[in-house]
Length: 217
Ligand code: XMP
Image (cartoon, rainbow, N blue to C red; front, top):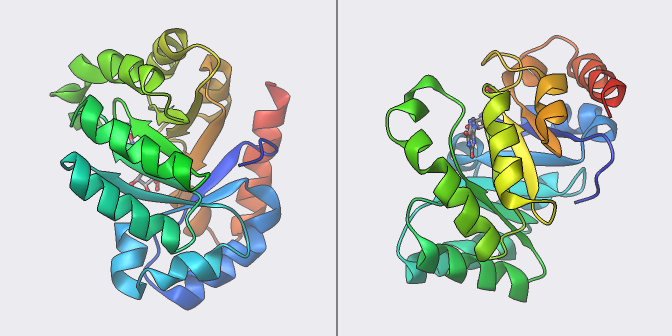
């Protein structure tokens, strides 16, 4: 995934025509498109192949299973054309190691969820977030997912993983986070969904986010 605009579109729409239309208009403003259960359950795994003509695809399945099942899931998703898969870290080192092995053998990426962006992440996840970040570095994942809603946590996680791993950071816009703050705290990319795809002019919103990001790098 090339680091250019540093913006990733989270495409949680439920209709393939809409997904294709939005991807086409924002393609020049984003470095990747993140798809997950909402779009894929509504339209099928084939949407990954269709969208991959606009940008690299990150499959946000938050995979959280035993190593063998993680392997089977990652293999299918890479086969469908995804460039990266998001996996949970709380399942531990063996599940992550297997996912990273599959990604490596396909020349693809794994991003590991550390602490999520919503308020409920404080209930259980935050306590494990730093240990998960360390494990992601030890297992040589490509990067981690860290919350733009808490830039101070992005900074903590950056300090743990160093410069070898990348950080993709959701929570900008509708969830209250700021793209500039997340990038300043150490995120490589911000992930933005509703603020872009629910707008009347998704390309203009994406362009504005990119210029906010460019001001702080
Ligand atoms: P919005 O509409 O809030 O969409 O801009 C955010 C997107 O990111 C996903 N999301 C997360 N994914 N760790 C993740 O791996 C997180 O902490 C996290 N927070 C939000 C969300 O599902 C949506 O696609």
